[in-house]
Length: 111
Image (cartoon, rainbow, N blue to C red; front, side, top):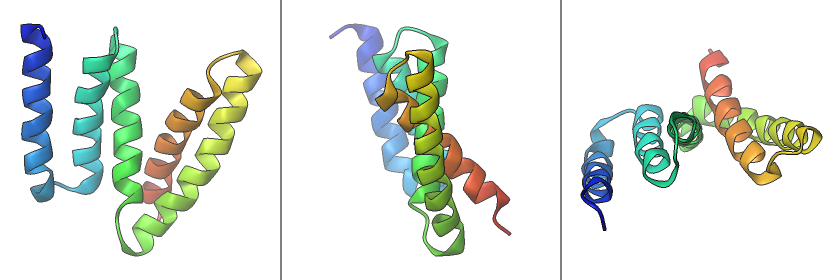
């Protein structure tokens, strides 16, 4: 394992350990960004990881905000998969990013 991968793995472990003190949405975004950077080759991978992580964190919240995020995530997954299929991209990746974005929107728009 290279030094860069080791540093990214250490960062991921530290973020995971401190995630309990953070908001679930923020923790998910941070962990997703580190995972995206570790596995991807570009800034786009990091941003995609952050979106998916933040949406997942939002959907894991309890109460009305979590419920709204889960509903937004379900709609976002369908829209993302459809858009990816129409443009010839990975349907699974489109669904994941769509669910993440939908989860964040669902949480943010809930009063």
